[in-house]
Figure 1 (cartoon, one colour):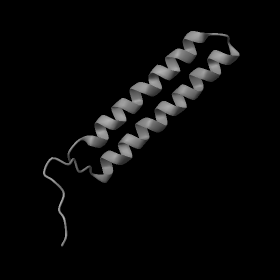
Figure 2 (cartoon, rainbow, N blue to C red):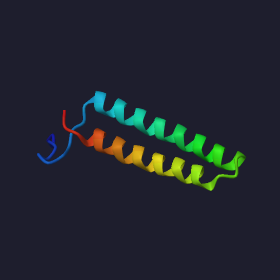
Figure 3 (cartoon, rainbow, N blue to C red):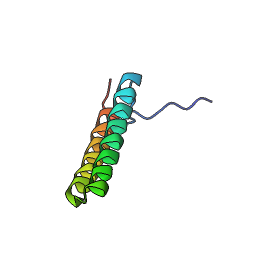
Figure 4 (cartoon, one colour):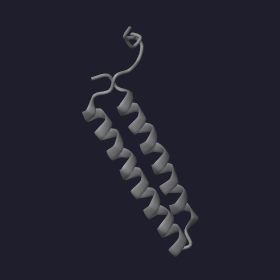
Amino acid sequence: MKQSLPENVVKSSPANLVKALGFVALGVALAAAGIYVGDTDDAPGAALLGILLLIGSVVLGVKIARRKP
């Protein structure tokens, strides 16, 4: 007997998942750049800004991925 998904399960479209992965990849790149600048320039604010950008992009990516098609 085949079970069906409950009505409240969010089904994402492939386009939303690609957009979400793009935002996460962009966040990782910005975080790496911020940490690099913070390390080479002795600017801890740049590293913190990079990490905050990473967190924001992950949150935005999850929000986009959960959006209904």
